[in-house]
Amino acid sequence: MEAAFMDSGTTVDKGENARLSSFVGAIAIADLVKTTLGPKGMDKILQRIGEHDQSVSVTNDGATILKSINLDNAAAKVLVDIARVQDDEVGDGTTSVAVLCGELLREAEDLINQRIHPQTIAEGWRLARKAAREALEAAAIDNSADEARFREDLLRIARTTLSSKLLTYEKDYFANLAVDAVMRLRGSNNLDHIQVLKKPGGQLRDSYLEEGFLLNKKIGVGQPKRVENANILLANTSMDTDKIKIYGSRVRVDSLNKVAEIEEAEKARMRQKCEKIISHGCNVFINRQLIYNLPESIFTEKGIMAIEHADFDGIERLAAVTGGEVVSTFDRPDLVTMGECDVIEEVMIGEDKVIRFGG
Image (cartoon, rainbow, N blue to C red; front, side):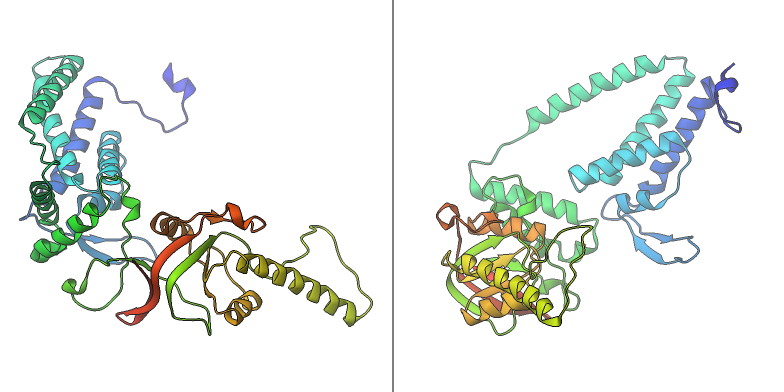
């Protein structure tokens, strides 16, 4: 009867066959990543099988391995989804949750063979989860009131996490970096405020935690490379020459002089916009969008440092760090909250220049 409502080629597994298929698929996934678990876990060699991409990668990260394999087993896909959620929410323990689920299903298979109903097994797991949670909460020690002990707890967690990563030989150094960064959040759980810049070259120990904020952008041509006691205006506005945005329309002129007049009118509007920005009293202007040549030259004449194309994440972090607001209109300077910073300067990291915000 079911076949009448399904596409041709569709198959239906029921009862024992469906359970056996689920057990086999999920346990196979758990066995696949089990050997990568822990500090003595082994790496896996992954080779792509695409027509134009046959690259090879070596990893022992459970999330990376599970994302790379193609599956047609429903239970195995559920296991991969569990690991993906663990990676998104926690960032670690992807292999552990896959292995734990696999072992639970391995034991459940024996119980099923003893004619115990699946709902009974699931209820037993819920009771076990509750008992395990209560045991963990009873054994937990809260050292948040003692900063020294709390820091030591965080260091142990960081070392444990890094033991199975490529940084295992420098885990003490990077554990300190990670804990110092988290401690600076002062209780906030928003890890987006921690920015990680990756630069090629150097050694692992060349990594460091910057005391200020680093922006991987460039300062405008001819503008000051160092500004002290900076008043920062953060903006998300178009800084190209204002165009006549009348879609579906066409402007006809009968001479090149009128073309020049239109261009001059556009430049006059941009000059007016730049004057409004300068009237805020800022000596640093940071825009999420591009800053074209004309406004850049105006800012250069006024001795203002202009930084363009600070992407969404960069401008939002800067607003959080400097205490300023991101604005898009400039008619009311009295309603705008400016960002503040002791010093902004251009520094070298490796072979690249970045902008450092200090103080």
